[in-house]
Image (cartoon, rainbow, N blue to C red):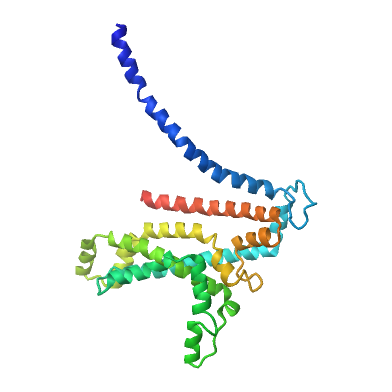
Length: 302
């Protein structure tokens, strides 16, 4: 009997061994990933409760909630929060609205459509610093820029965009970068729409506007939700475009939350205050991500 039962017990124990080996193989990667995320987070939390200013290294010790209290009572914090919301909301409106219209346009067959799609998507692959420099020096410069040359050609005075309309200029640059992303996602979603459905609506007398609002736009609901979620997460951390073009100015007109944290930590050398701002930014980003993910999950269940 023992010779019969032994192989059976070994057969039952064999599947456990590959599972254990998989966990052993995954452990180094998971460990490195956890250290990569947890160590910076723990250090940020630690410094946010400490008095740590590189300009005055003699003042140290536990600060409690002083850094957070100073942050939320600072007018620059609330101005940066408003600027962040304005920047994110404006870019989302431009990219989703214009991206939807461009997706409908590029879905139509026309000569050179392949080249046009590549050119429309290419700005997404330009680095933020490079795109900011291009817009600052080649497009919006009041003397050497293309827009300044057009204004002079029309007999109008050139506009110093980053001095007179700083937030609008930053919004244009960031929207130009993220519009191809929205176009790519929405164009892919439109191409997945059944052509017979659109043809049936056309044969029933529905015009282009009716087909757009009652067929195409409802079909794009999930894709638009994905675009909004992805862009919002990244737009909350816009930094390079502001740093290269306006440096948060004039005053604090273009200072968003990410640039405020940079200014506190690396310009004012207030590591404690910068860490407190980083913790607040992490909390806000996670709150926004939580509601966006829930919204997309509800759409996927429909």
